[in-house]
Image (tube, rainbow over all chains, first blue to last red; front, side, top):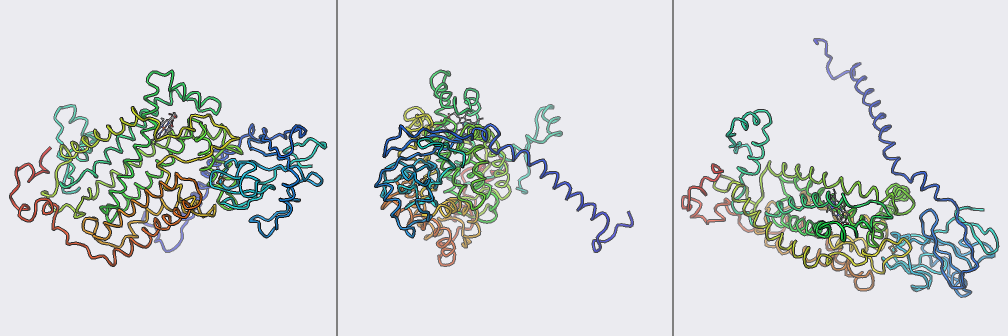
Length: 179
Length: 426
Ligand code: HEM
Ligand code: FES
């Protein structure tokens, strides 16, 4: 007892104190991780992300079809000639998230637009063929999208993203798998 | 308070035996029977008791509802309808719980206004005030997750919009949202964890509320003059004076509560929530519950996603900084002619924001929301700091008893000995 050193110099006790604390912190983090990780999308949910097939033949020109992939809503839009024309002639400088329509559709398939169906603002489902550009209009906070699904107004920060998909034939696509 | 030691004297042998082992009766007695409160407290001071009642009411109705409710995306909606139609008095339990949430917020907003108006947040009550802000945040989280449980259209889209707020965080936002959902969209895992948290959070509120009362009992209550208790004549014992006032106020409050429950149980709700959740269609006009509308208006007023989210959270967080934003030494608005006016203008601003939050986000409504949002923040960041520097307060009374009875009355002219020596009663 008499030999307790003053705080001036680090002692072996200080070392043990810090070392124990450090190991304890690693232990707490190690135990916390399983709890946090359990909140992530589980294996079943991830497995439900298997690609889905869609036959395009019944989709009439001008029609928008909704389907789900991985729990996410997806729009498949059979665009009319005017809609393609409107999307392609928009100057890129007028866009918040500049992307040419060609980069959002597959080559030679300009009539087919496949995009996620939740507004990039806060996730509502925008209404088709509405709003200033007759693409989509989001009723929640007024975001406007053009016929390429690109944001043209309102609070949405980015374009409706294009999910990974490929044409398996001339009239069918598979969503969830890139070629 | 140190000059008011507990006057509890256990009577029976059992009570003496118990008290010497766990002095909890003495603690309750000194906190809720003998505790000295300012003699001039008005009805604004009864809402703490109302809030406590509402919390217990939500917990009791909630526990019984949970016995009949199924937290699964395929069954939740039906199980709530089952509660409404098949369970004995299920309609009553659910209407008490759903309207109880609204009443809880009515009471908490009045309670907060009381604090703002009478300067209750100022030293030495800063920690008490911050604990209150934490309770408000927990209440909001609880009510939001509760509203998701019936799994109607408003539940689903409310959950989608509010969880998506976190996607505004740069880089990690999307990952955080997937962790909140337990999937790639709002779905069954989301409902399950919200139910778990909705059950948990009220008990956390209860814990923080106890700290809140503890922090209150250190300096004691503020009062309409803002002048602290200086002598026994300024105070009356909690029981019977405050218990009876609280009870009377609670009865009036319960009449209002019952009126909603029995005569207009769905008035405060939204009809679309009686449509089962449908992830492919958003209701044409989505609005949150009324008690979130002012904050929702602030969210929508900012034309930038991240900016809107920050402004919304800041509008609540700013309350926690109020004790340091206010530069005035005088607590009560009764003695601050300018602050008195501005505190009512602030109420109008908050109500205005609430109205705008319910309107569509277009045209003039957007402009008005922006103006009121700017005013909301200016109130805290400009008006309150400047008022303390430029306002001339009215002269403060020397004591509470002087403000109540006038200068003459502060002497011996009290009607009864009971009022003159209140701390010895009870
Ligand atoms: C701070 C206290 C609480 C608040 C503010 C609150 C709020 C809410 C709200 C707003 C709803 C939706 C009502 C509707 O439209 O149907 C709800 C539902 C529900 N709550 Fe609570 N709640 C609280 C405490 C509790 C507790 C402690 C439990 C369980 C132990 C609970 C269990 C439930 C259940 C099972 C539902 C779904 C049934 C229904 O929708 O009526 N709540 N809650
Ligand atoms: S969710 Fe579409 S504009 Fe907000």
